[in-house]
Length: 120
Image 1: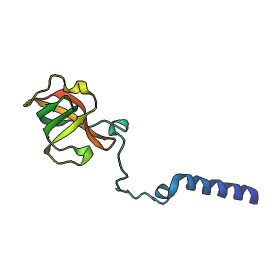
Image 2: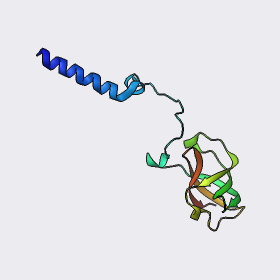
Image 3: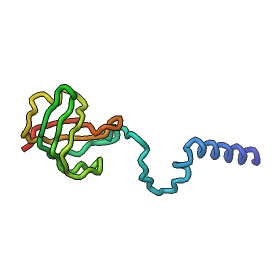
Image 4: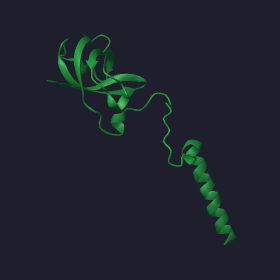
């Protein structure tokens, strides 16, 4: 019986060590620390559609400047800024003044437009 208890305790300790200090000591508390470049949210769920207006398209740099609404998944308020695009084909047919709906995520540390659809 003592051997079984020792084996169970040892297995539990190794399991907690494998989790690491952040998970083992979490106890249900949320941590909001930024741990560097995030993986795309698309991998964990659906990205929110954001209304935007195209301000400038740069096909050489594969970027688009947008005046956009709030981007909830990035905790970003409405503003105008330039984004990379996940696929250069997203820029085809876009021009300044176009109303679009976009999804935006953080990829390798860069704010990136993941999809573009015509808006209203």
